[in-house]
Image (tube, rainbow, N blue to C red; front, side, top):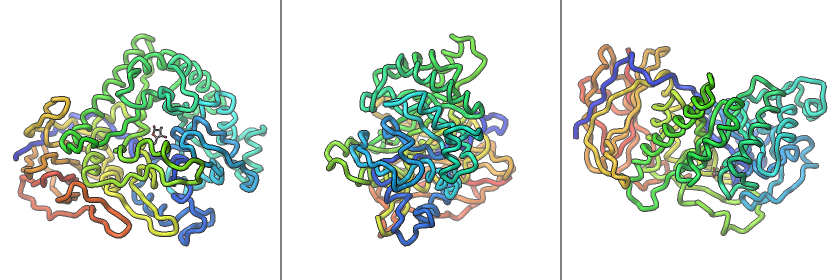
Length: 492
Ligand code: AHR
């Protein structure tokens, strides 16, 4: 099969905000306890954080990590997780029906974030709580004043403020599974008042309001309009969440979900602009895609799992090779929408629907999705070019014409590099790739992720899915194997 990518270096979509390569750690299952934190592990550091896990996270160069939830945050009292550990309360955690020891809270998490070389994106509880607790929390985290909560932080050993710059106004408040779910009107009002007090305490922060937790929510569209009607002038970003799965075991349909994600982003951006026009506003509300991934095998596990366990094995999705292909495509979708998506979080980072898995007391390893995420974060920096792609197409469930070639092209002027990310979605045919507009560019590296077996998974025993560096033959066209993910680096 033949395919072609045409670029013009002047024709750009926008600059990539590195925060689109963010991730997420929730107090859920073994993400925190027996994930990033395991004081009895032989690799634990002086605070009980696993150094082998930090080393894998460092390889991903994650710019920002959302915390502490997720559904968890809607029942969370942040004060339970500060100060003397021996006095912290053990509580019933209602989002995941687990037991929360509060051994880790914001005091420790912001220390972990420094070790992981990342920033914290903090979510406040707009489920069981509201503006009062949120304003106290931001005073504790960010204030230098001689006042109660700032002094409480000092007395807990943190003289300097944590300086958290990005705050989420609750989580998935459109979903009835949320602890104290709200109507769009109720949420819009609560988010507005919370936004006001947060910015009064620290005007330098940025705020994310909750959009839809899935594009198939019946309220998608009306939720955004009502929430933005209230919050438009007070927030900086609107969130989107989406998880895809291959329940029907139809790989071509599954890989076409990248187009659905694109449509979700574009529709949400249009709604933001519609409200901008309606309000005659000068400001633009951008997007924070702060939960995205493949997730279907381990959904709703908490309903059947024994209740009130500490760090149960929840949502430990085992990612296979076709999941890595879709994750690679979804990253390209984010890059291709970098004019509007400024933040995105792969949900999540460790053990819970995650690129990194750990064995309690044992090894840490990379799941198949680790690699497309790592390469996007390391090489997908600069400006996205508006590339034209030509290839044969197929019909997916929605009957769209889906091109076999899925791609993004990034111009990194600082490094003098054009990076092409490309997935050949054909399950049968290799692809001969022709390039146009690449004059003066020399192909330096071709990294390929491929497996004959779409269902192959990595495990602690064996890494079946790992990238290879292919020989760089200067003679074009380049060959992209059937169902493969590729990264081509051109120097100019
Ligand atoms: O990431 C897992 C869960 O998915 C989050 O807690 C929630 O926000 C979403 O429904």
